[in-house]
Length: 404
Length: 225
Image (cartoon, rainbow over all chains, first blue to last red; front, top):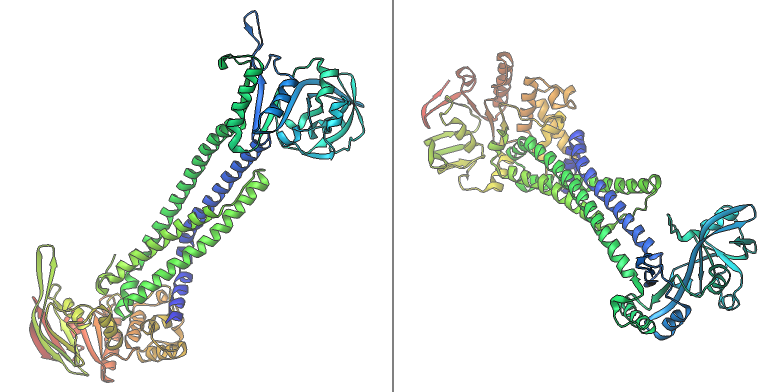
């Protein structure tokens, strides 16, 4: 019995190769496009999330307010209101902050041997690595003693190293000159992957004391980065820092504060609203491909059944019981959708591999996309393959035989 | 042995009632070759459906081989068709793109018969129906009309049915081929098969040994040829 069923199914599918392959094509395209689409979307989302994480974890950034002279604002961050004393106060008095790293940053011309470049020089503390997620590739980062003694040592960003010493060179122990002052290179950071004007890979890090003494010539800091103890304490930490600085700067009206505070949650929420729009867009494209694929399957199955109603009538007339006819058509629909589904999954996976390989995109094939695409296509295939056949099998054999 | 008693069939299509059979009674003995003749609309197709266990009468009784058929359900009718009735249709109704052998084996599907036995029975059946042995692996759509009808006859014979029911078997054939097919029926009848032939052509009906004429849902005449 079961053997007969299998044989009839296989015979029917292989006997009509074009019909079978066209039906399968709809399923394959539907599933493959959804999988590839979602894989590309998820990959993009992940890479956005990763690049946000790379700027630091639970980060709070404190920037000075605008400098005003004769009623002319020079823009936010231009005032020199933040000092090392503020930094010390934050690190000792705010309990929700785990690390504080002040920055004195400015662009300088840097030379090393015959090469030179113009890049951002950041004077900071050892805590910078923790606050800003900086990792060391070669050598070491600044240590407390070097800050204490205002040592003329520098850590290069990966891009800055490439510009000054050539790609992947080991510059440890080499001398560079920043604005005419000689420094010794003690480390190189790991490439973060960024681009543009504020590329974190194109920085040169020096001890903050050295920077203030030899380069900036004053005691102010450009901004302060602080890491909250956890994502949940970011808001509380931000409030505490605000209160502390208002008190220290003797300001009673918060709207008149001479500093601005920005936290990573704000950045993340902006970015996540972008990514959620992106996800919605991709999901709707995927949904449309699934719908189109589904309509393809539906069409093929319905045409097939119309054509096969006479065959069903004949089978009934020669005495095949209705249940066997139903089972055969169900088996055919199941085999077609599963075969098409498997090919579709492989194809979709290959497409996302190719996309990541040739278009240089991160892709991630997600199980839920596979299940959804497969479920919808299989559902459509089985319903539209089986239901009309079932109806035809319920007809009297004569009606089915005469069906046009 | 076929016994029809007061067969009435009423078709309902919305509010319209059509009485296709208005009380038809006759008996067919085993080994007879009977032609049921009548113009279109006479009710002969309806009668064929009832005799062929494709449909049940609205009232009256139909007994095939001692079994009352008028109250069977879909599955029981399927079983009767498979075991007791062999159909030959006007439009042959062979599975397209399928070998002759497979077509003949179709009624043996889902039965407890081995593949080998099925093939053997199909070959015998084809030989019996006068089909050229060299064509058994040809596809059904590569055959001529007369050959297709022979395959259909072989298919009808494979379960060794009590009756062979032929519905306008020559309707799609030319005169010469029609006569060859009718000769085949006569040969089968000579070998003891009961044959019921439905037709509207007097000439074809005359190949049978008895002609029942139907008109407007009742038996008009019943004569031996």
